[in-house]
Structure formats: C-alpha cells, structure tokens
Length: 300
Ligand SMILES: [Zn+2]
Figure (cartoon, rainbow, N blue to C red):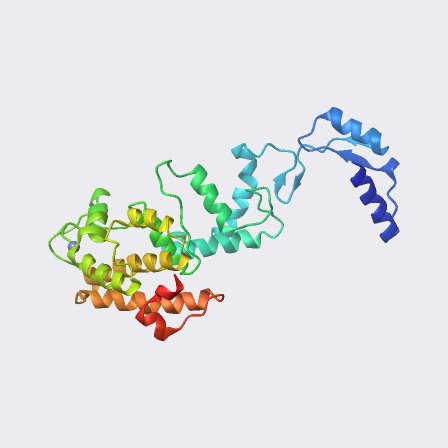
C-alpha cells in the first residue's frame, strides 16, 4: 500500500497532475468488500463497486473465469475472426500458424494461462498436456531445430494417430490391403513400420553408422525417445524426428505415387535436410557440410 502511495506521489512529481483523492474511488476485483473499504479509508477516498456488466479487454471484470459462460464473449470474438477460414482444408501446421496469428491480432487481450501475460507455444503445450491429454499420453516434445510440420508429425506418431492402413481401417475406412508397402511382408501399422519392417532396418543401419551410435539397436519411436531422454541432445533428437518423418513421407510416396523403394531415398534426405534446417535455425553452432556429410557426431 505504501508503494502505491509513493507511486502516486512520483506520478504527481513527474507529470504535475495531482490526484484528488476526495474525487477518487477505490475498486476491488475478487476482493472482500471490507478490504476495499479499509483501503478507501487508508487512502482517504471512497470505496466503490464496479457495475455488473462492465468488461475490460473483452472479459467481464470481476467475473469468475473458471466458469465457461464468462469466456463466451472471447470465444465469440475468436470464432468471428476464424469464420472466414475453412480450417479443415488447412494442414495442422497451417492451423497452428492461423491460431497464433488470430491470438496475436487480439492486441487488447492478454494471454494469462500462466499469469505472466505472455503468449508462448510452450504455455499452450503445457496447458493442453495438463488438461486435455490422458495421463498415459507421452509428454509433448517440440524440437526448435526442425519445422513445425515435422514436430506435428512426431506428436501424432507418438500417439499412434498417423493414418496407417491399420488406423484407417480402425476408423471405418475401406482399405484394399493391410500389407506394408515397403517390405510387402508385414502389416502397415506403427509397430511394424517403425520397428520390425526389413526396409526400416536397412535405413536404421545407414543412420546408425552415420551417427556413430553402433551399440544402439532399432526400437520403436517411444522407446527411442526414452533413450534420447538420457542423452539430452537437441541435435540428435531433431535427426531422429527427421528420420521418422522422411520415412513416413517415403512410405506415402510409395502408396500414392508408386515410387521405387530404396533405403537411399530415405537416408539421403535425412542427411541433407537435417543440415539445411539445423544450420539455418541454430546460429550458435557452426555447421560444416563436408563434416556433417561424414557424421554429425562432432556436434553431439
Ligand atoms: Zn514393412
């Protein structure tokens, strides 16, 4: 309270605008009436209450924000701004960009999930993890060295939400065959594609020798993530993410474009894209293409 009084005095000293306390009122939001009156007496001004319908920055002042109905005005505002877009036609990365742009355009509205009034993807990610995901869901990983679309793909992969033939069938979609298009010997589902598929094993062998981690055998993405947790290297994690993403892209090319299968077609883009994306995103590390091509080990 003393600090507030001092602040008012400093404001007067700097601006020359004296605050007439007799004409001023003190308001409380979410504070007991007694406390407001005590403050009023202390400052020598009136204790007052806000009109019920008053809103500030689109949110009712003094409202209990844990009630859904209090968020309605903000929800309507957001819906109006998003109405011109058909989000179903956008990729997941595009949806994220659009949402971020709309939130950013509400310049009067302050993000206060963590009470810090700053909008960050990390805050939203933690909020979604806390409130929407089941306890058994793996924590969301977001690697800043690779593009959003790859991170989004990993998020779906770790939740078994990528459209493999098995997953499509489970959702009632007609599939001609369940067979894996890469080896034609297994079933097209996560555990096979990213674990036991002979084609996957060929790619892994190339990747393992390039990364110089010869003692690590191929395991499923969530098991690999547990191993990465003990390693604490963003670069290695980014390469693994790219590997799964390139592998899935290659599988899709085979399904839809009938391209020829070759483990080189997966491995080469992992090496070149990882260099391209990471060297442009990570300014604090010096990347050398001749060294990177041989192995990125020196940076891990
Ligand atoms: Zn296979």
